[in-house]
Image 1: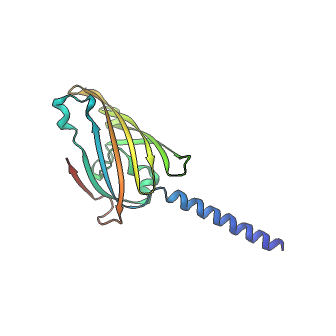
Image 2: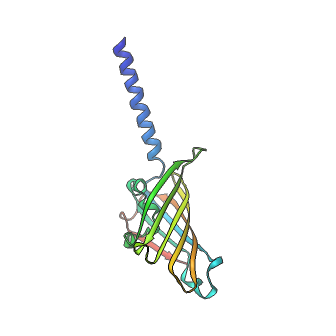
Length: 169
């Protein structure tokens, strides 16, 4: 009887651990994701707005990209992943059980050109992040920029990992 109880308890613990990992791993699904990065032009002078188009691209993301935070970094294109280092990733489960809140900081060119912070909400098949960036020094009268980065899973990967298909509007 004692052996049966221990085996049952062990199975329950293994089952609970597997469920916890499955819930955590379900936070974001690997696959093709469509990204959009749009700038709030309110603080951007009219003559500089052409420099802040809305950018959309599709890329294949792995589960590790989401777990490490790489999928949320400011420079998400494979060709520029190293330019703007992101760190200080903090994820917290949302009280409603629908995803996580996410916060991190970033610095481009070691903070010599751009730095800022991001915060938002991530779910299994989508995320929305608000990015607050500061240019050092200001560029063309632009010192601060607010952007919104959204991501939506659109299906299984159809391109190789880190292959980017980008469009600028």
